[in-house]
Length: 187
Image (cartoon, rainbow, N blue to C red; front, side, top):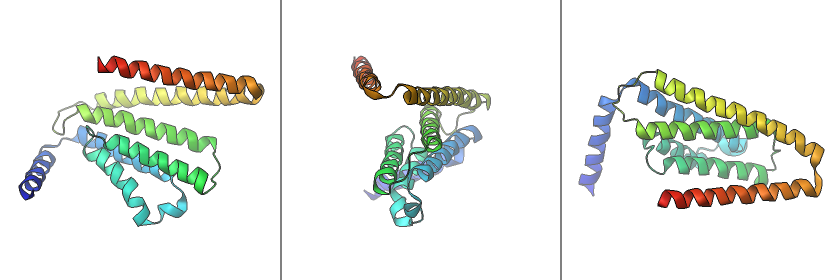
């Protein structure tokens, strides 16, 4: 057991010694987007308590340090739990700016984690690579925000049973697409 821990620490020290600037900056972006998403999602009363926030912050650090593992999922789930605790347990209002900010930060954290997962610590990478990656991600965030605002505008006009039926059909379609994609990946 002790030899395993010693070997891991030696590997971490070796990786830190070989680290280059761009992969380090990508991992800093993961940390920043995760911490900001945590701050937006969790209630202020809980954010000030270090004992309660140690697990969500540890999940974000885990995603930063080991992007190939399940750390990204743990970080996203901790943010979602914070949102649920804040909106249901503390009765926080669901404001459009919070929803859009949280969605944008979760997407940026997710896409940066994907980039970091394929980018070794010691990779010699041009700054153009993460810049283009983030540029595409920001376009996706902007287009999504515009679509959400337009859809919310339509909900005010439509409302009623037709809107509820369209929502249920949309959710069923999203679940079906997810199942089909999951089966395709397994093949």
